[in-house]
Length: 629
Figure: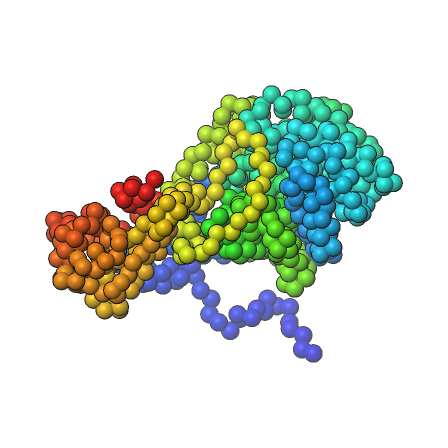
């Protein structure tokens, strides 16, 4: 065996070193070919992408300066950026936690037992408010070994009754208090965020503090409180806003619990933090790492030391990213999200079933959800590496910038009187609303594409039908989805189909050979189908002489001209005139008109559709014009 000398040898030793300036010069050359003149750092900025929270993703990260991992610490030690336990998930992976919302205790029990027999390791039960009645917990958990399967409750304002029912069930089945695991799910702040019921916060926190004291005294493995950041994510909040709100809520709980008589370490030990995991894998990884770092700082100044300062995290795949159309794609989204949650160091991971947005999941959807984590841990071995993203210059920099942005938002909330006051006075709603409004513009212009919805929709796909999920209380922060604007358009198209037997149509007037028109014809078809408008591309190509007859035969009332710029200059104007003469109520042209805008408009082109344009506005105006309610 050859031993390499310990003299700074690297695998790149035979290659000449490169500087950032040399890399920038190469970028300048590429940009010049694309018609952009940028020098030095400006060339690098041209390749950067702005994210929410004032964060920018840059094209190059290095070991120098702010990109390094200095200060991240070691896994299991403050500031816990790299994980709350030294071994991470290497021993047993993460806890696979399945959610159950069915109100029928018998059917819930069937689903629970099926999950536990096939890879799920803990249960998340909705109790009351449309879920299993507190009195039905015994039936719902029949056959469950409560000393092996932690139970997490979600009971809204009824968390006291649900907790008492669970305590009674443990006693009835002879489960030793020291063996009880899980969380009672007290969450009055989250309830206020979701419902606007701010009057429940004070009595709710007092009741939760009493439960926390009981857990700390009698049930060492049981927590009483959830710091749920999902309401802020589900309202459209950014990653930093989600973190800042969770931090402010956690601080409020430390104040409440210590005022009730618990010491700081016992109070921190009663909290579990819940975050959303999205298909933006790097942002999710950085968010969970930043959350642990931020909470470590709070714990430090609160006098919490050692492992008690490590944040316990439950990650849930984002409901905002789940689509109602082409729901099968949700399997891919949740796979990426759960992978990011595991890599980011979450202690427990819930994968929402792919049909979550459609109602109550069926057995197949639950099976796919639980097997997602199983494959990631058992076949991909993700749990066997501690902090696998650690040391990545990009992830370390993103973690740092996200932590800074979240801390600034947390301080603003604290300056406004704390989380309860920020919710009550509308600060949280206003700030998150502004964030979602900006993101909605990106969704409408398809700069944030949604596969199967705003990109590559399939109009002929049969709908997936599920039993309706119980209605959850509303009245507080809104619940948004990325697909909502396009879903509204598709619903109008569905209603038109049901009433008339056909969908609204657009005639694709393609000019010249396929090589000239395929790209823009595909763009137009994709665009109009996103609004439920069926493209008719028959015949494959038209000219001024054939366009009128082809349009009349299509059954459409609007048309879109598609081809290359060269053929537009020759044929677009006469074809537009022919389409107008044939009765087209609106004529679109795919692409930018350049210097010929006035010529095309005089010939009858009403609007130009381009990449980055407001697709929702265009599609809505088409449906309005042709009378689709």
